[in-house]
Image (tube, rainbow, N blue to C red; front, side, top):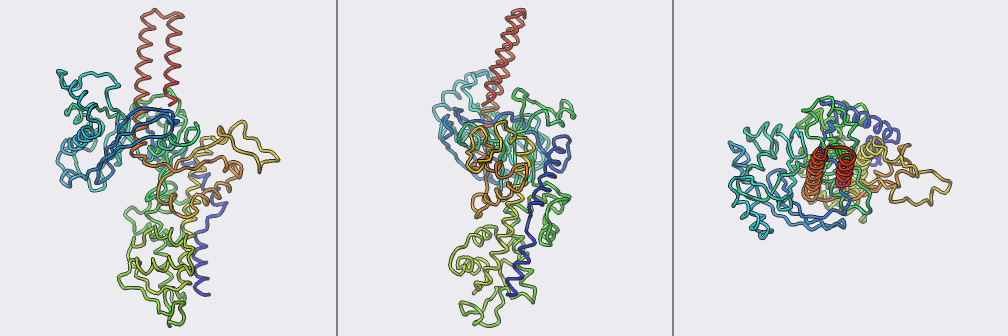
Length: 555
């Protein structure tokens, strides 16, 4: 009884009430608005210069490359136009010496050569035809018809200052890379230069954040023709990207032409990378237990990413480990401490190995939360076996396992309800529930939701995929928000979006390609109108060019 009571007491510390959710949503919206209005806000709200999302009807062959760490991935994606695609890919490890090279050229020439190898292997006919045509040109960068060139999305998972859809300067390296020569340089231009030196028919069309890619991938593959509002990652880390009205991104105007960069305003929208892991670093509304506080104090970045430290898979296992260790060290709580074998249902004395990972920071993997929370085996046998095999806890009793399961479930549920705060805030901030046909009726319980009323959300990550009932816990919290409620929650469609750094990057390259074609067409039409002397014919030419451009941009 003492153990059960102690576990319930700890689990109660992770309760996140309906009132907490509502306070969190209100503050999240405030910090979103702050980030749209100024640089240096707690929530960065980074403009991505991506101004449209796909709807599944797009066709074409596009490329994507992904430099996210020690591996480099090259992909080609054939979009079939029916929300499906075919993907071909290769992956290569980055040599250690190139991660700390003296010059940018050493790394980026290696990347370009991997693209060349990929093209030779998987698109040899296209490669041979157009490389030979380019080599016949008298200089590098000879002009070609646009359809002859692969448009490529470059997922570059390092901090950059982006100033256009395919322009971004490196702020700093992370993940073991340290090439000082690259700092402050445009990484897209560096890659394009090496691609051109190899005479490859490839244009770096877009610089991609993987969360933005998640949004794009979901919007292409989601059922129906409703564009996806939000792409969110709930995995090792957490982040979200969503579609915002361009006129609300006021910091672009305040910062002048340099801050605005190359903004295409034809759609009136822009995808924003929230970087919401840093939400409420000041802890004005976020819950904070003793376990959260000690984890943060002993982390590599104390005081920042406070939302992420309560939501993402990187940290949930450590929160549980700290709670377990606190109970083990409490002499009044008999966790993993049977005095006699006859006190244990398997008649063996529980023992924790001296080298158990439970004693080490980050020693408990977050996957254990999913195992414990979803364990329906008799006597929680699966949890007890995992404690024995992976964590050196032999002969754990059913009561021990139940105590651990209770706390693990509470930590996971809190993470899901906090995730709902972010989703709800984006939905309410963008006004996507304010549909004129959304009228409450007395027959509300049987009222079906029309496709036009759907708010589509794409999600990715191990938590949302594998943690038991994670989505249902999110939905419970959405219903706790009065402005959403039961009716609004039904209109939120949550679906898995895979491979934002591959498929999503290719789709952003598609958007960039179409934006470029639209700008060219508009420019040509403007020139033609001027040549015709203006008047009614010039006005009509310009009007039709602008109309066609906008239609093209609504991909």
